[in-house]
Length: 268
Image (tube, rainbow, N blue to C red):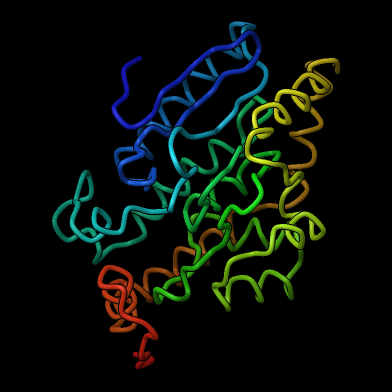
């Protein structure tokens, strides 16, 4: 299958989806998200054919991903029409669908991050079963500093991982997460030197492959089913639909694009 913004590879039982947009620090455009979705379907077929059992998400270049492509986010209207920002539910639902597809994949999913893993990139990592991150990676959910919230499952999944108080602290401050703290709190599984990132993931995958495929699959299904995300994801979509109509949102995005800090929030 042909892609423009990602690569795929099959290495024995490991299927890899590799972000490949280094000139944009792998910022996630609508096109990249759609291609990731198709690649997950490709991995699922490889699982059903008895070829793949583990799915790696990683990236070429300087960073895993700087998050959503803000320039594209402000200008594109790919399949939602020219007034897509007036009905955010369709866009948010489409993005949530891709993250849900990752979370519910039959394969064991691992996110290997380096450089940057911000916003939508961190949300994607939270949809994976395991997160392995390189030392000194900038990791966080800065959406509130743009006048938004993490609305593609980031709020819901972070709450499930670490509870309400710590999730509020991370999201409300929008600051970068200390990686030692992230490991202690259970947000990431391992923090390793950058050169050991792939090695650590392969070691963990090798251990999992020693276990019975059905037992691993049912373990994932049972744990994932212990909490129902559907209502919480609807709340995320509702909140974002309100926020993206505000003056604060336009102020926040403009500040990022023009590098004008600190932001003077108006609260409307």
